[in-house]
Amino acid sequence: MLKHPKTIKEQVSLLKKRGIIIDDISNVESTLINNNYYRIMGYALQFRIGKEDYIKNIKFSTIVKIYNFDRSLRQIIFPLLEVFETSFRAKLAFLKMQNCISILSVQ
Image 1 (cartoon, rainbow, N blue to C red):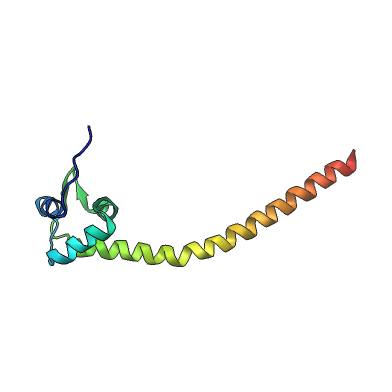
Image 2: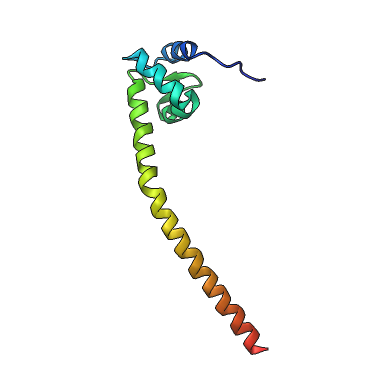
């Protein structure tokens, strides 16, 4: 069954209902508008107890800090991975080509 979309105010109410501490409602609303509820709350799964409750004293700002750390880490790692991937594929293609040449030479 499809869930009906919730307004930002309803999302904030849901966070409060689930025990997430909100220090600055306008900051939370801005974060939800710009990043999406589910994207942010994916980082709260480690704090979840049961289906809808979270450990006591978990702040929305803590969840956002974890999200921001992950985003910063990805911005550092992905360019490096691209260099590694390109180099790896080039070497793999070269080895495959050498293998094909040696097979053709034997025949």
